[in-house]
Length: 404
Figure: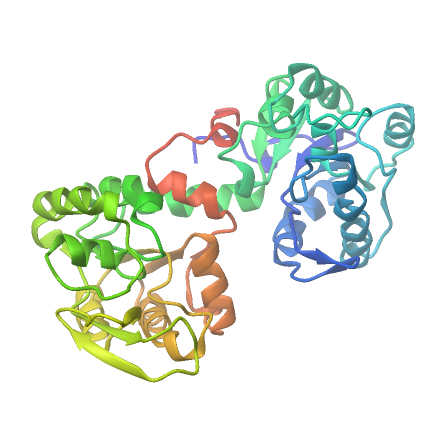
């Protein structure tokens, strides 16, 4: 990797500013899923073991008014991190001011401190929505940078597509910004997959809307050997092919675009041949498989058995697979089969030496829920960030990391 990593830094005795992604689900003070906290542990532990003093920054949820703040405090996360590290994580409970500065000054080597939710800065003391953090206020980035010893470690891939004060703002006020281990891993897998893949390279795209994935489809059609499209967005393509789609979800204003993509892509684009449909959006209703088109009054909620076999045949022998988006409404057990079968098949390619990458919130949730998460080479921690990476965009959080 041509970027500076945490291992390139001398950390002993240094106050090390670190951006992590602890945007986890919290209900009544209890963390619902701590995957993101666990994913950041290797970098945090490394900094502490090297004698660094870790000062952690993260956002949590969206803070748009003063009333949002109490329910979005990082206090429960700091407590949980203390348990995971086996040592107290200092939590002053503020984002700026003397209390924070004194706590930072008092840190010993090998100690960690967590700053309160960076998005608290989006609402001022008068309760106005001023977006200092999410609008990358230059003074805020400068202030946070002043808390450390001129080094910044960014390990938050999940926010790499956003230009915030706590990532780009801090980075522009220190002389060296390095990638943490998680960020390094994300860049490594996604970059190689998109820019230097082992072939055949197959992309599998799902999810509800074509509009969310147009740029990804177009970018990957130029790079992959095959692009498989399933999920809700496949019905917009079905409509573009002149097929009946019943009451299935589709975007009428994207049909012409889908026609263009079909014409340009030729046999690179692989679309479903059949659908598992129901008369209403519910799990416990009669289902029916339709081929070539769906009758009025029915809606497609998953790919059908022929499509599953067609997609597996397309994936056969692939050496690189990027999967973004489920094949159907996997949250309902009767319509999870397409996602599960394709997921298991992609997983089986891993054991045959393929690089298999899952990116995007829904597909990550799907592989976890279906119990197949351990079958892939890499599961991306950033939904929006991995999507923008697959679109070929430059992510500000990555661009701000110093080159070696």
